[in-house]
Image 1 (cartoon, chains in turn purple, orange):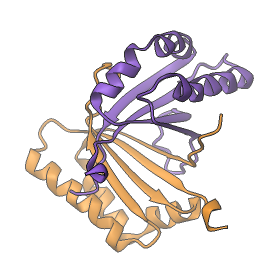
Image 2 (spheres, rainbow over the protein chains, first blue to last red; image 1 turned 120 degrees about the vertical axis):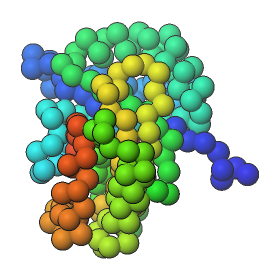
Image 3 (cartoon, rainbow over the protein chains, first blue to last red; image 1 turned 180 degrees about the vertical axis):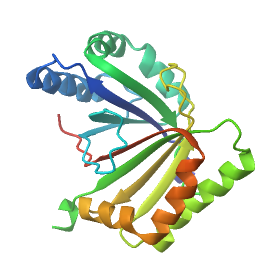
Image 4 (cartoon, chains in turn green, red; image 1 turned 90 degrees about the vertical axis):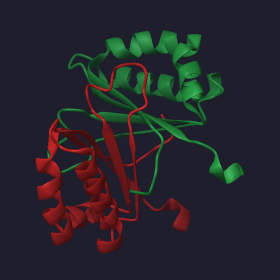
Length: 108
Length: 108
């Protein structure tokens, strides 16, 4: 039943502080992406900047989505020293943040 | 170069108003999912409720992610009568909403 395994998506919306330089933002994104190679339960990572036109992005500029195979996997990630170290630096560069975890379903 | 085609993810975070019943929420989710069959550029749909433990979800309770093949596809979706009709009903049931579109990249 390999096809049936649970996936948990970990979504982070970010607005960087105005005084954080593009170079620093690039380094932080690189640091975030690098967690995939350091934290076993983190299975995938993707990110992007807002290209919406509906003007409902509420000032958020970046999104980060990582993939786990269980909520326990997310908990292991959150508690992992590599994440704790990175999160301390990353969160201090943000003006606004939302973190949302969910198990994707295509069914209503 | 079929593998190179652009994907645009359209993410909506929602907090329903307190007086919106679970039954109405279910109907709204069904209506959202049904847009896939009505609007050609909308290629996929998934949703979920928050299962995060970091307490950074800022009150948001639901996430909806739909997939397009271009930003023009998103624009076509936004302007489509089926979306306009549904969005009028859906947004009126929400306390808070964020809409964020992005082209996912796994590279820093």
